[in-house]
Image (cartoon, rainbow, N blue to C red; front, side, top):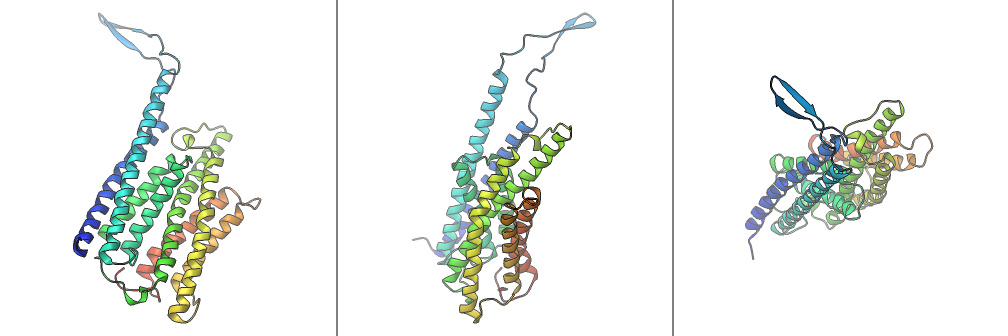
Length: 328
């Protein structure tokens, strides 16, 4: 049986490996997006210069068979997409093994400090992305953004937030850590996919508005999936994540009563958890309210995601409260 030190070292190496593979997958998705943003014109003539003394004669060859070049380009795009998905799956496997190894090294659930929460939450984000991808949802355009965030967060985790594997601080030594934080991790992972879909929806909606105004949209935004498709994808992600986040807030309140003798005390972390909940509740309500659905609702969703991250980073690092503890 490997010792805790060996397991901790293995976990670190697996996380570093996952970061490298995530970066490769992100580049593959970025390459795919760049190719689709700058398509080769279908009917562009190919010119041949033939030397003839001091002058060059230019002649137009026969155009390629109709549909041949689009078919080649589509095949290349599908191949790049498969490579990116395979790399993402490999990175997820390495990431999962790293998180599990960390838990075995510490002898507990692997989300007892900011480093571990970050590795677990980014694992949940990748898992959510792969689930949507497996269900053939139109999420390939989200890949570069989700993986960019995952890679950045893991990079910060191993360089800034890293904490050696060890015992929990007494304040966290409770079975509620498993319930409350696990729910927050799952919700945060799915919120990440929802935020990426919302951001792309707002880009596509702006491109559609430019088209309606007579300005032809070119480039990345003009070749995203339809705005309605992206909005539906974002709404689906938030519909799943919001009840999970609600459960996380309620479980935290029960844990607070068990630890401090009160369910709610407006501690900074409790306050920002509630603000996050209110923003996402407002988003879901706005989706069914005339005059608010669409762009306004999308900005509410992004505000909720920003509040979620401030609750995790800002409150933990810069605001003192009952949830402040060593090792983060």
